[in-house]
Structure formats: C-alpha cells, structure tokens
Image (cartoon, rainbow, N blue to C red):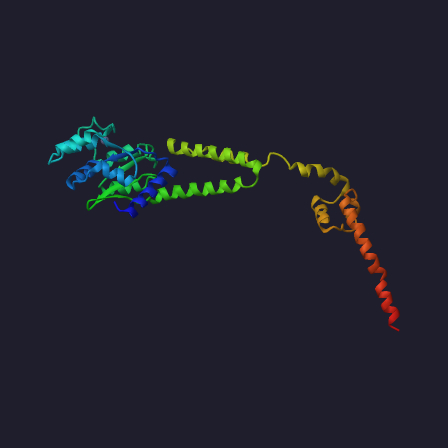
Length: 296
Ligand SMILES: [Zn+2]
C-alpha cells in the first residue's frame, strides 16, 4: 500500500476511534463473497486487512457465511479451513433450513434492532454493493471491499460525517465556556466528562441521549444576582431605577431631581461638586467680562 493511501486510511480509522469508540483489535466481519474473492485473487486476507486498517484485527465470520462457504459450488477446502480459525459470529440463523443471504445476515448482525447503530463496532468486509449501500446509512460503520485486487476502505459516509460534525460542534461550544473563568474551569471540565459519558452511553445503548436536556436546565442562575439584591434597599426611597443610577455614575453627573436620590453615592456627589467648580468661572465669565471691557 502506498504511503499516501496508508496515511489517509490511518486518519480515517483515527476518526472512527475518536467519534465512535473503535479500538484495536478491530472486529472485522467478513462475508463469504469477500473471502472467496480474496482466495481467487490470491490476497493474503488477514495481513492485508491489518495493513489497510493500520492496527490489529479480530477476524469474524457469521454462521450463515460459513455455511455459504460449505455449499459453494467449487468448494474451497483451504478457504474453509482458514475461515474456521476466525471467531464465529453466532447470528442465530443456524436453525434455518437454508442460510440467510450474506446481506440479510450481516445486516442483522450489525444492527439487530434496526435503529441505525453499529453497536458492536464492526468493520464490514463485503463485495455486495447492496449491503454496502445499507451499511452507509449506519453511522460509524467502516466498509472494506476489493476492487481489482486492491483492498479499499471506503471514505466516511454521510451518516457518520453528520454525527462527527455534531460532536465536534458540541466540543467547540463546551471549549468556549471553559475559558470564561479559572474558577469555572473545573466545573466545566467535570460537566464535559459527564457529557462524554452520556455520549458513550448513547453509542452503547442505542438512541438514549435523554440525559442531556436535563443537564442544560440546571445550568441557569438559581436566584437573583446578589449584587442587584443589595442595591434594591436604596431603590425603595430613592425612586430612580437601577439603570438610571448606573447611567449617572457612568456620566459622572446626575440629572436634576435624580441627583438628590443618589445622595448616598459619594462618587456622584464628588462629580457634582467638581462640575460646579468647573462651571463657575465659565458662568461668571471672567474672560467674557474682559471682552466686554475691551470692546468699547
Ligand atoms: Zn446468519
């Protein structure tokens, strides 16, 4: 495998690890057609898959697929022996008279409850385009197939991309909040960890994810701002609203009647005095008087 493709695949599997909790050894579910193809094209399947996925793998085969190998018209004994060494995925179809098609069987293995979740985090190896199309609808399902003796890992499907982007946006949002203050950082971190747990639960338990809205509700302020409560005492006899008081402080000069109301506020008082002093020389017009005197 060329370097560029190896790097691409490594990145891709890394995305599956981050967003869908994949961990090596990856559980790789191979269907009978895929195995037959590897045998026909003389591909040493397990080492090749290990190279493509860039980590240890645990090969698996379903009971139905094993039966397909036994009933194949040119029976490949060595392939059967090889497949016997894989871990058997008991699909529960062994009591049926004829095995299910690989498509039906693998679909029931990956998503038994039909809720679009790859609960056991399987990597799917199949040559059936219909099954691949079905698997693309399930978020977090890596798909491998063979094209002209090349083992290919499909790019992440749209369903997975959607989930990945959603998680990323959430992380970004939480990251911004964490920066508000040093004191809050610990609390935020804890909250983030809690969210991660919720996320994991969602992937393990199917739909889930109900815990989050409740957490959101707890975030808001629990009572009035203590700073505003203190000031309300003054407000009762003073008259002006808190906002006008604040505006006066900012301006440095109270407006008419409201000035007396803010009498307790020393800052405002000082500002008033200062302003008067400034006004006096201007109003009495020392300079203006001189001008008048000079004019005639
Ligand atoms: Zn089956």
